[in-house]
Image 1 (cartoon, rainbow, N blue to C red):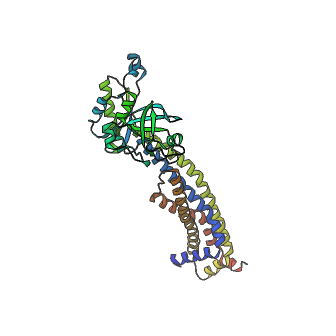
Image 2 (spheres, helix red, strand yellow):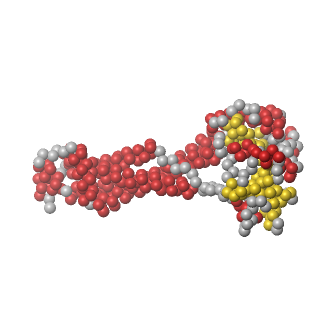
Image 3 (cartoon, rainbow, N blue to C red):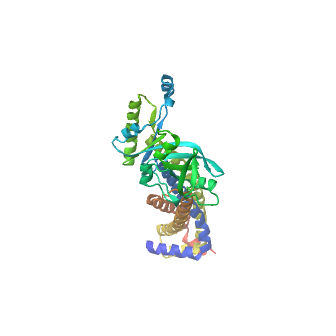
Length: 397
């Protein structure tokens, strides 16, 4: 009997006992789906965390953190501006840096008529809009003319909009920032995603911020590299330049993206392996179910086996017949499990706001593992069928 005929016989046998076959495959379906979900969500979560750490568009933040020794040497170091306009211009000359985003911020009380709320007021440059996404839900975004002229206009976050303008549109209204009038020209979209938090924020041109607060220093500097591969090297060179300019050793630091990415990768891989191992237990249970139902099938078809042997079927042919049936059973369960796992992981990642990384190696690996399960757990029933005595099989009732 050819392999094709064995496959057709296996499919007909599964069709003849639909309910039993579905219940047998259930363990395989759940096990494969669980492993697919864990791997896809694990890899997607890892990618999301790495992207969050790396920032939007290959960005990294430069920190100003003087050491204890530097503070003892210079007690007034915290009174000195962290970043000046000259520092920003020097950083812009570093090879590999595409944009330098300098931001100033203050926590202030924001007032509209009788409503008051605390918020973070950010003075941003035009390059900020090139690097970070400030999606406007209502009104208009900041324009180049706003930055050049230092107009008293601002964007406010969705949460601040709800706090100050619960029953009306904020666009066109004038709020008081540090007791200075500023017109609201736009309201930002509410943040989305699993780890999104609604912050109360105000964004205005940096020249406007400087006028409102009478300050000219920058609190935060973010660099954008031309590529992710150049980000770490460019950041380290910028830090060295700043430390040399300020005669400090470690006051300026940049996040080590490579170490953080590797650490995140190790943690998520370990967690994925642990949870995947737990999910794999259901695969083992499903394999035992396949072996059990195949043993029942051998018992039910004892006379059929006896007839085949009496007509010249060899032990190897009987063994292959039942092995193929077991493989087909687990393979169908594996395919359904992959489809179910892929669909669920896609839904989870959609609502969580992170990517679901369903890769072909994982899908192919799941299919091959399903076939291996069929061979391993179908070997005992197939061997039992192959070793049946044809005379005793024909007498079986």
